[in-house]
Length: 392
Image (cartoon, rainbow, N blue to C red; front, side, top):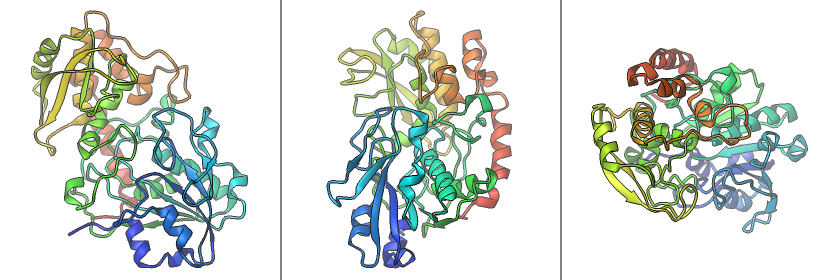
């Protein structure tokens, strides 16, 4: 059975909840129904509904901007509606201005998440919920499946010092929740006071991976081309905090990684010694067309997930960067420049939500010690999230 997204449910209902309202919508290229019609276009065409504003997260409403590139103000070329940017050059630019919500009767969020805490769209949602509460504008979330399923959790909770736009709240790296469930969690646990309505999916169950949903996968950002990317992203996004290419500028970002100075065979041999569950590695070469090592020949490894139930993406990612440092001959380095509007905490620590992993790698700890305590923290979160879950 094909899963129905929250948008599909609303299409069947003729957007009745929005009739007579002036509406703003937070959208990107994933905001489409089962016939690939975009929410902005559908709202603009629905009698009795006035589409008054669009809000563009990181990468923009039509997905044309690369990561960490500021998105400017504009008008949507299809609907002519003003587009307000929710991703600029400061942390303040990540929230809508109260005056942008003036005259709106509803704010709708409909964006596909990928199930990893670094992915910024759910924080765009949370920051917008705060402003909607302040402006007394009802907030609607059209829910979509979590591509990684909703049962497995992995990782530690983000420490207070390490909060950023890649970890704004204490979530584990793999949180096992949908955007709608997270909205309920944020609103209640952090006392946002938002008038929140979540429109659930129909037919989605927690044990489903993306391939079980019957839904087409639309790239939610330029470097998230497939569900296979999402599967490894929980671990491999950590590469953004290093001088290793995480495969940006290739056709398989995050599934492959490398650098000009890596010995691919030695790296793969080192990784295979860890006996990581559900995964194997293949030596690989690639030349990025942009980002790190643009135009340079890199060698490294390709990640082949052999059992997605057993696969532990975060543990694998930490093992990878530990191995890269071990075989890199002193050429491995942590990213030192500002990252996601923070310049006084290493990017790798922001992504990890702690400095434990970086310090441990530097001090030569074994893998088990690098992730010590993480399972207990994700178990605590599993209990905390239960009141907000919508699916069996």
